[in-house]
Figure 1: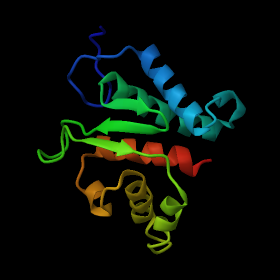
Figure 2: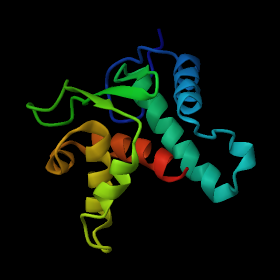
Figure 3: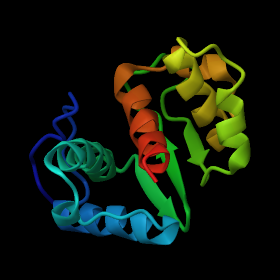
Figure 4: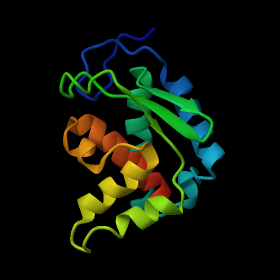
Length: 150
């Protein structure tokens, strides 16, 4: 096991090695039909995609991510409030309902639209995502962004 930190502010030792976590990310992308070849992307797309990939890998190294077919089981970090941390949230592949959930908000409410999309993927209330730590929120945002970019 590695002794390095995850880079996400964690002081815990890394539990999964990077290669394992990269493979999990690729398996998740393949299961969901998400292109992950950064060489076929323009520079801006590749930068954004690599940020998402690194966020996924860091959470995986900290054993907060488990790929389950087309879904991900994500464990809320220790940085979120007591009544949230340690909770496992199933993030399912979005359906058309996730896109329709975004229509419930005004055009200028982009974060609320994103919360609606993520809410549809997880079954969690939209307000749930306003109460978790930024590390966790950014993970959910990253997964949603993978699908919004399809």
